[in-house]
Image 1 (tube, rainbow, N blue to C red):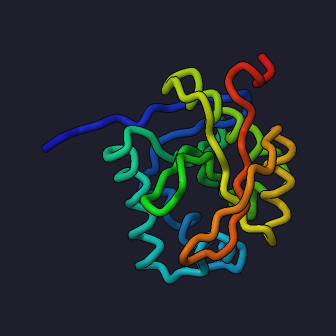
Image 2: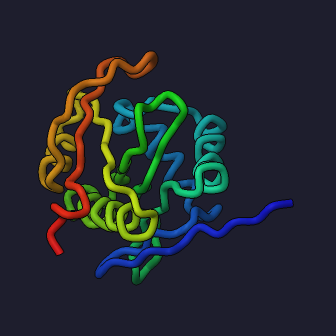
Length: 175
């Protein structure tokens, strides 16, 4: 049996950590809602459980992945943010999903910025993208706010047209 560790990353307000079973209800609630439509939802609870388990599998197979974003004080799950590279994506991305209770609080920006720093400072990456559905106006606004630039489009066989947003390179990221 092989083992691996999902690192914990902390910011001023947040903890990016490994998923735990206690996070699943918030995850399943998000995927049952219309808010998940831009990323393949809504999904039933069994399908959500399979995708929840895949978070850990991605870390084990790829060596990087997404974290549960939790409040540093209460440790309640607020969303999922991190590095993601499914087989049918053109390259690794910073992906973000914020649960309804965390909407409008700057959680996605803070967590995505921490994920980008991890990609560049810990993994040594020199570039990373985010894939955003054109109708997902909140994610488009976040991509722009974090400094990413529209870098073309990608026609995904399931999700259709996706916009590719290229993040600032390590030398461009403000210290």
